Length: 455
Image (cartoon, rainbow, N blue to C red; front, side, top):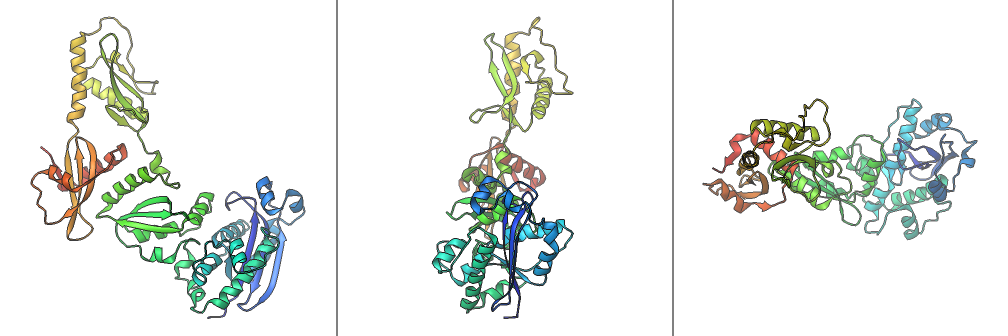
């Protein structure tokens, strides 16, 4: 192995992410691959309150750091100790993100190759139940004093690192240190083989936590490239740091094209409800068009919020969109505006007066409202979309029935379709929703040549 020097680092902080928290203690141990050649540590005044739970964990309180140097006072020393050395830490991305962020705030541009002793231990000593520092010290009989203090944890990491170097007969650590190595960017708990078998094809990928529960579902035109993007960059939010720490496995399912991947992603998120998927969880129509008959016998149309189990004539993303649609429909079918309820006043929308004189004939009015409602149903067509599959021997297929997504699947490329409804036999049924139909309708409008209308 090429001769390297290593800076083995441990820090204590006021919280879990570098953007909103600060270092309260730092220890740096310089190791030449054989022995320790220098050690430096100090408390750091974070210039903010140390939360009680952090004090309970580390024993570091506000009084202890009151007279300690601020990070700006030690930044040059930290920079000098880390420069031209490999940055080593247990769960390295946590310590690295804090140190890099606070050095940048003091005007120092610094990057380094990293070595995570969690990942190194997984490679050199596979099969252990847990790779936390505490468990590794217990299993490997490493003495650890002053737990959750920078100096104590750094000393234990030095012993662990030295033993890993000694036990590494296959040269795993040398491979990890190559600039092109996936270990320079993969999360600490992710098995490299999970990443290596990812295809460069469209599809859906799944991230799992320690208990094999899905915590994130994503879609991609190129699965490997998209997954890689999750692990690159230097975002320092707590959400990203927790996300990377929680990834213990990846699986995938290839799809014939991007639309199939988008639909499968949506279906899986609704089914699995993963912790880190937030955008699609929120993407549900909030307003709907409702019809009802009042005690006076007149049929009314109303805009209102959509409840979880409510059915409505049409759904909309915003109240403004819903109001505009009802105004257009009522004008088209000449519905008396006194029988249209728009909810709260929307700026710029001309609402009519609500006097109760000279009401229209009940039967004629209700006939108009029924015609409007029937038109909504008539507009909901049934159609199939046939596109390329996952291989040359198959095609992807989607079936929409009366304006609602029915299902999707794959069929052999030599199957002849004479009627669009035959596609229904080849799809797996799924529950429709507003977002799925937006995707399907947009795609159908853009690629009309792939659409078979059911006449």
